[in-house]
Image (cartoon, rainbow, N blue to C red; front, side, top):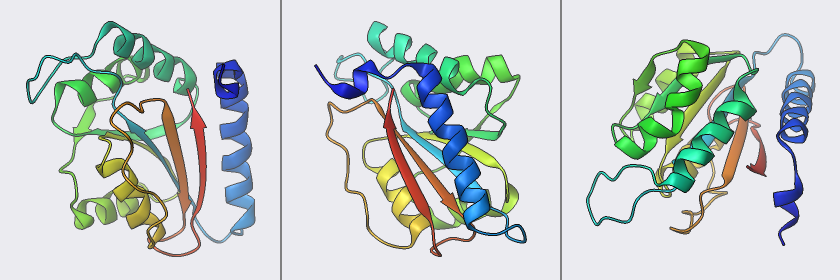
Length: 175
């Protein structure tokens, strides 16, 4: 049994709050820390299509994500234009009364724009096994993360940055 499976949503939220607080105090009060919560889409149906729906397990994971993040102050929710990513964040977006914004994967200027538009706030980005690590690496200005294994869905990667490529910090948790 994996240890991470024993962590409750409350413990995850407490870790998030502590991480956000440490990120803000570590960078000084005159600097605005932007927090990116990066999530790969939940489990998908293996139907061979290019745009599959979430599986029942994936739908349950999407609800867990919504439950975990519903009390966080999320300024914007971004998703690629695929059913699996949109449906991963749909429960949270509905709870928060937010519209899910679309982005194009692997576009550096879109990441810069997100950071600029939401400076000092928290942004949730849902993507894929290859572009979520790419976004983290882009924000950090270095290659710290490789592509996720195709069977790996439970990772939440939190990146705190003041500006792209400068003194970022990361936290990985499973949900």
